[in-house]
Length: 216
Ligand SMILES: O=C(O)CCC(=O)C(=O)O
Ligand SMILES: [Fe+2]
Image 1: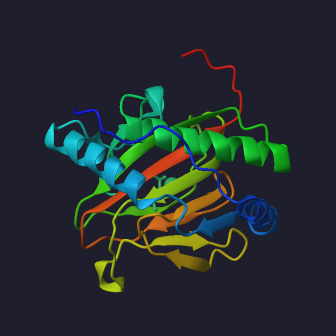
Image 2: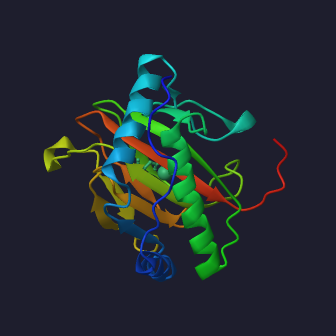
Image 3: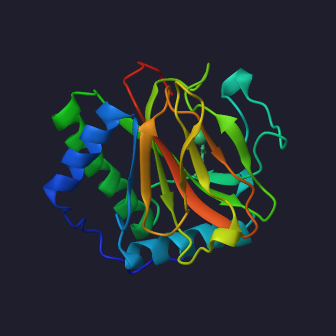
């Protein structure tokens, strides 16, 4: 992979953004922030993702972990690859998530300890059925983040993220997977679903975890 020329510094976001995020997490368990990431970062992340795809480094995502891991294309159809600090784009993305982790811990005392994230690519026809992100084996996932990478998206392109109200199980919001948008929700509480996409849909899904004491 070519190293990108992206600067590694992280711009600081205005404080009210974090205040609103924490208010909404307490209130209803999810929040959407548009234009969270700048275009330069998005373009470099897309370049990384496309390079992995061309090199055959994206693999069909599975359900669960370790011995509980299963591949089921009827449940989800994305291809994924874990982020690392191997390019400036991924470093900057992970630095941004560090800022977010500190702010949420400062405002909510959530004890978020570490962050794991993967690039995801949904080819036309792919979807991810309604689920919650914290299941047996998904050790310590507390807060989910999803960052979208497609610079244009029309309603007819499909691939919306449906967020469900955990009490009524009704759809509470449908979120367009447009570049710059960051979605944050409580991993155990919020059922959600990726509706079938009609275009290649690129994203980064990530999870803040508590300290499980897991030795890797
Ligand atoms: O891409 C999205 O909008 C959500 C992905 C998701 O639910 C997951 O990877 O667990
Ligand atoms: Fe999910």
